[in-house]
Amino acid sequence: MSDAVDRDDDRALAGEFVLRLMDDEMHRAFAARVAAEPELARMVRDWEEDLAGLAEAVPEVAPPPRIRQQLRTRLFGADSPRRSWFGLRLWGAVAAAALVAVFVLVQVQTPTAPDLVAEIAAEDRGLVLRAAYSEDNARLTVDRVAGDIREGRAQELWLIAEGAAPVSLGLLTPGAMSQIAVPAGLRPALAGATLAVSDEPAGGSPTGQPTGAVLAAGVFVSG
Image (cartoon, rainbow, N blue to C red):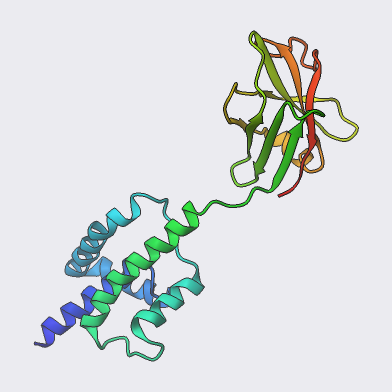
């Protein structure tokens, strides 16, 4: 009976080990046991295989210490002895896997507010674009609210920082949202800069500077 209890307890501990619910000292001690005990190593592999499906949809993210402690307290109680209630802990570790997965999914899938936004509009609002920039992925998203591109022409987006010449950010997509990767050298100049759209020949400006009429403009402000 004692051997069966120890195996069940080790199985629960293996789950905590895989889920990173142990403190650093206990994790190191258990890792040493895993390296020396083939049966314990098999338990760890079983847990990793069983829980692998939960991690396929998201990148690997270790739960912050605060979340890890909340999970342990919720599952095992603040004062529960570590080598008791092995059956509850075994199933508690399964619940922990689900909670960790939910936490990671929420962090990954919850959209974050943009760092900078701008309305790029013509005076008569015949052309209106909404721009949003996120520092997380260094991408500029431009949504077309009103107006479109004339046939045979192009609309080019320019960044105009204070005291600097216009720099092209690229061509806008007709009738749809445009996604633009902002080069690293331009990112510090975005806040407070002007975004302007010019009318250009198909393929964009041939000179590297605006050649046609400025159709709309707006200023980047904090989101």
